[in-house]
Amino acid sequence: LRPVMDAMSEQANRTYRKLLETPGFLKFFREATPIDIIELIRIGSRPSRRCGNGSLEDLRAIPWVFSWNQARFSLSGWYGVGSALEHLAEHFSGVADTIRRKELEWTPLYYIVSNADTSLATVDTGIMRKYASLVGDRQLRQTILDMIEEEHRKTKSCIDRLYGEMLEEQRLNVTRFVALRTDALRLLHHRQIMLLAEWRRLHHAGHEQQAEAMLPEMFLTVNAISGGLRTTG
Image 1 (cartoon, rainbow, N blue to C red):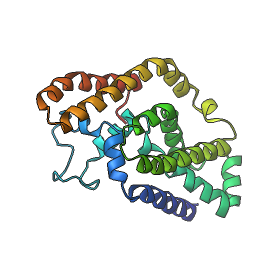
Image 2: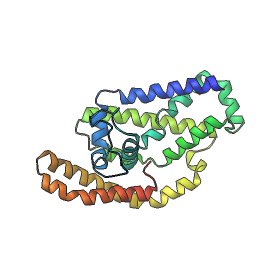
Image 3: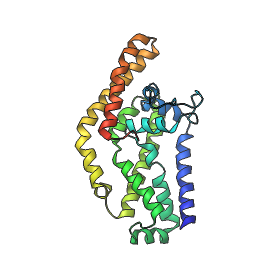
Image 4: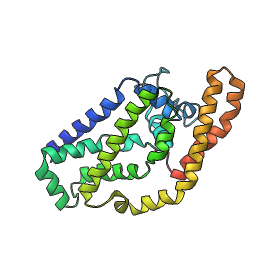
């Protein structure tokens, strides 16, 4: 099964790289997530960037994952898994059937899939679209969002087929945990989105003092959403 895992890994990586290398992706990331606020928060002993330039390669893993989770994309936990599982079904159907019969006893795949479906459980597509609405370029927004939503649909569908039951039934504890906090978290997300839009407007207009005064409340929304999700990612 190791060659199969290698083929799936290559497919997942190609899918993930295609998203990251789509023209304008960095702009989408910086506008659709609160990365600019997270970069201002003092977390740990290291800065968010290795060398201080604006590339994705320079960004450390923690702010990258943290910002996607804050915006409820949870992208780094599942993106590419759906394409990999689809590749498994199309090119290694016998293996896929064996894995299903053995109830995912193949430990490497079980570990990856169980982590991916836990990440999927924290995705809120409605809130995700609200954050995406912060992206000023409408065409860019739709291009990237369409790619993310298609892979999300594919990943959920493939995992459902692999387990033979709906994702919501597989992870009852996670589903219940998120459901209990849904309304409160959505209020926090809407507040954060509103604050982000205003803070960025003030910042771009050169009203630095007014923008600076907003930071404590913005930091509080980051902390509250992390507390509600019980994770930074």
